[in-house]
Length: 214
Figure 1: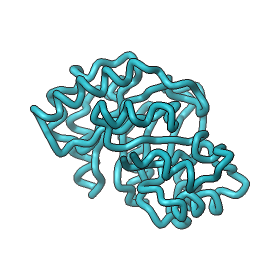
Figure 2: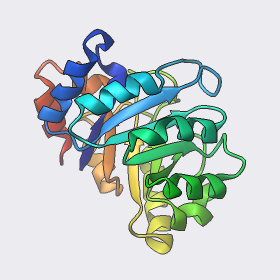
Figure 3: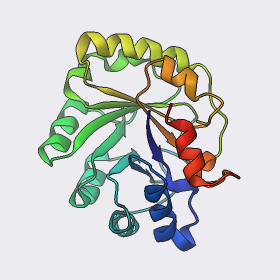
């Protein structure tokens, strides 16, 4: 299992140190949640802060856009050369065009699905993307409880991926911990995002990351 800790749960007063801590703790990616206060009821960070994250990180960035006007934000963050940029299908009127744009910038395109959005809604886009991010909480805030129906959803998505694009990864974000990681693995999930579980773990960051690498 690939692990992408979310810096949304980091201490922003010592962000550089907290980014270095997850990299030294063995994470595979650094997950960056970008919220605009419109698509979700929260406002997080812009390219200046993410540039500082990129400088502190020794691992590639996984940028999750929770925004309106996706193309504008892709242009903002593309110069930082993240590995992935994911956008919400619920917000994008022209997803194929945006996917082509992201890939043309040398970035791997990904699509995010809110908890209520069925995987069948993106079946005909699976051949064009490198990852699907399934939200297992309602997007906007960290520390929420895991929505268990994402297990069934991941299983359905895995079947579609095997038919359309076996190289496409499945990522899950929200309420991930050692209590549900085996279920996610069995459902075909390849990568998990964990924020509060990693940064708030009483046994330390490395222990938390290791416990998710099933």
